[in-house]
Image 1 (cartoon, rainbow, N blue to C red):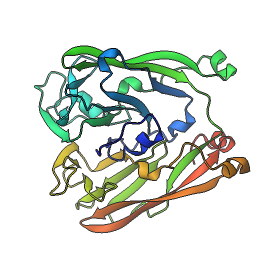
Image 2 (image 1 turned 180 degrees about the vertical axis):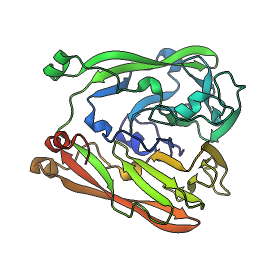
Image 3 (image 1 turned 90 degrees about the horizontal axis):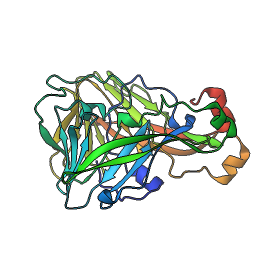
Image 4 (image 1 turned 45 degrees about the horizontal axis):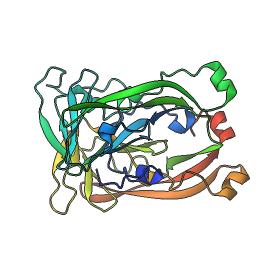
Length: 328
């Protein structure tokens, strides 16, 4: 995952091109723009003032943390077991913790590799050399949060309930915490879509799920490695053979592949497929029609040969979102 400059704005979301997270193909088709319940983070407690953290909505709420301090931040699962460690040496993951794999997905029911169990002996591995990380924490899922009828009728923002993720900061107990909020939907939304061939080569399929930051899906049954480069052209993700791997070496030199998922499918949030602003141009909003506002492409190779993965970003007015069920 590349280094990002922490900024409570859209710029941070766009820096998450390598916050790689597995999202099984059976995603809900609605992007987060179609949901009025949002997970928001409260101000950090005094014990955590030396870190930066926020919630970004990609295909689902995602916690993003940067810890440039000299102290170690442990992220704990619901049973109090640490599954992530973030410090100046980078990010370590406990590869035998179920929470590590579940935090890589925005969906329920992720299959766990052999040897992964809540009571398994921890096995820590460096997964990123910079002190920042983003993950889908199941404690921030919004799909089960109900909005009272009166709140929805009033049409005003409202705090519905709370969430909390316990952490340890150099052994001191604390928490990342926030609220589930009702926020009326905006007058429109950005939707990315794929325009290149969904099967660029035999055995490889590409798909896209809409979101504030869209998710790209690749299913590789070709028996050949599919490699996706980051914004700097460095190898970043390898899908197959034998699973999916992330490059832990963000500098020049040979990739250091770390296995992050088994199987031949992988999905990641991809800001290069998003629009670069929170709002569409004023003339587009005033026209009230669906409009193309950007194009995008990704550097992908199959067995070392470039393949086309590209698309466009459309602005969809609110009336059309409602008519289409939140997706196109």
